[in-house]
Image 1: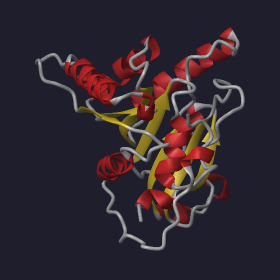
Image 2: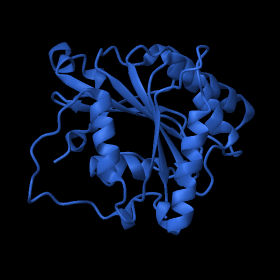
Image 3: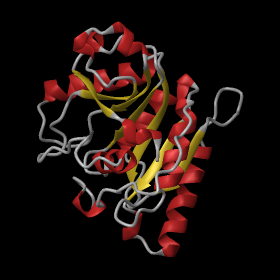
Image 4: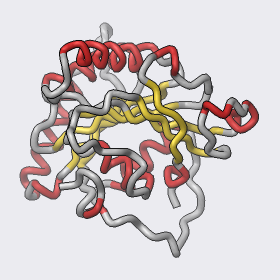
Length: 240
């Protein structure tokens, strides 16, 4: 059973000043609206409604935190002992790329995302969710370029791979690897960027993504449970 299955809602914030005071490592999930971010989080945590997919993509503008370990109490409880027991945090960042939100909301949203990924010391890595059929949009590249100077890992998950045939999947992965390899630091060294294919519908790449996230958080998975029940990906919020 994956350690990620222990994830529980922790808190939600809309301002940097309200970020949790925990010191546990965080992994943030970012991606274009409708790329399948909510589904990926829900499948990886084996919880159908943990990450909420808005009926109007792009409207959710809060940073949502999910805790792993501890007593799973919200930060508002101010229970320092229990907060100290939190082993890690999964962070669901607002989806980006939809035009329905106002200009002022977009500016706030952009600053919130940029400041968080660039300045949050507890942030151990970024998981960038992209539709395998349309990866590396301008906004995806902006997120890469915001985060790359930190020198921390980025793991790209190419979702909806079931929509591609074998050749298309191979090409999508190869092109993504080439794209990521083109990013180098001032010494010409590559950044710690990795990429994989993923399909919630076909349950493709779930173990690979789980193992990568567990490793980046410095966690150790618990023993497998032979009686564990997996959620149905067909019912996941934005799986297609």
